[in-house]
Image (cartoon, rainbow, N blue to C red; front, side, top):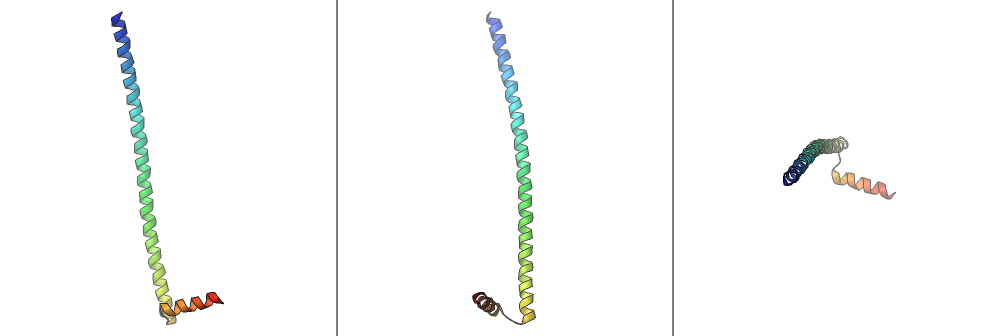
Length: 87
């Protein structure tokens, strides 16, 4: 009788250990998926930051070229736009 209870107990422990092992596998698989997703998000963030810097540089170059083409400075351009906005 005691032997049978021990066997049942042992069997229950083994089953529980197997369940825990499966839960652990699922956990690590999910963790791996989240880490991969995070890596992709970080790559996209870097790409967008680089694109932003490039566009800011292009904008500054375009503004400089306009100032050169029309022979005016930044303060003159600002004054011109300020006057236009009050009309």
